Image (cartoon, rainbow over all chains, first blue to last red; front, side):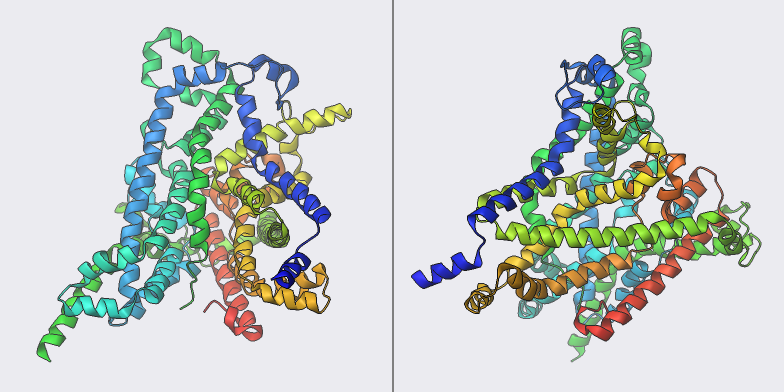
Length: 307
Length: 310
């Protein structure tokens, strides 16, 4: 026993090296979250302090003017955008996972006659794409995506990568005997899919759902291309529009009818308001991700694409 | 016998039902655009009857769009930037995250190691737009903290969004910052899986820490390094539009170092509403990308058939 401990000690680094490693890694870790803290500090600075000293980690005077401006002027738009983002994320992720797992299950089954053909249907788009211009034109001219809720959902609905991960998982981790037994008991393929295969595939489904949700949540590109209506603008697109023109959040109907709010909107503290919205848009993720993290880490080792 | 045949026929029917939704998705979002890539060889005009009819009716111009594209200087610039940035990104992220993973693995206090990992994973969850605000808070000419620090040393404020030479460094740092937590955790997962007996045996033979890393750790994680690098190489003709369009705030002065194949297509179509040239660029991107993927795969097969993709 003692000998073994000696080995462990010998394979580890010394205490001095440990301190140095800790310092280096701590600095890197702080760098990773520093910008968030910085932006938060800007959001609670006073606009005049920013005007004089620029962005500072510790501002000379604090103020909540940014947040009150957001709540009074941009509150309605922010809420609406949150709602759109949440709807898109939930609907897109749910629907995507369902159709991809159905597809992956079918092509994972040896007794599906057209398995090879449909595998290729999914594989080809991974290696060759028509390009941005034809995709954009098909979506706007043929599918009429403009200012349509489904325009935010459809482009990200399926991905070859995820389908392959699911297929590999179904193939390697679902005992064939179980499927066979269910079939003998008279279950049809749909029943096998949702009664046996999906419950067994929970870990990989959780991970992929999370990855998809992150994708939908962070998608600024799709709304940017197809959405101009304020009521359909998701959070990320709102942040982008604000970067171009802070007055974007003040573009709502309630404001036009209320002259005092309109004056407020004109004089709002632009820098702090902007940063306040960034903080409000990021805080939920920042609070929740330590809980998701584990699923992503466990999921990263789940899927290989090779057969 | 007869009943068995019947079951397999009905299950084929159910399988076909199962593949329909994704197949429709790929037809609409992948195969129809592939057909639309014909645009690159056409002088596109709108005719009555919608886009597809117009596409077919538009006159052929052969390789005119391509020859025109490659006579412009931008073709060279965006190709160089696209491939250059991707290579730099792949190298920096791989080297830094392998080094970081090895360091984290050596830490004696495992609780702190978990905390560090969580902190480093944070940027992965941030969206590009939020990252662009972060970058702006550092680099803004009047208010940004970098110029604030420079002012302490009596250096004149620099207009970062107008300094092309700075952006290769800035974007490399931003990319590293965003990706290092994620990839280092990937490597760490496979380092943790290495059997400790190897290290114990090495210590018996008097191997130093450095030798242990060189002869045990690195060879063990080589397959996953190769796999991840390969996966990144397949995307060498693609860039993240968010990084090169949003984070750079599509400032015109820095285009020589920030224009990539994707921003070129994007601005070509959206800002200049031209169709032929951006479409030709897209096709060029897809074809070169495909050739590179096939070459890389073949090359890998030659040296290490287990790591090949297909």
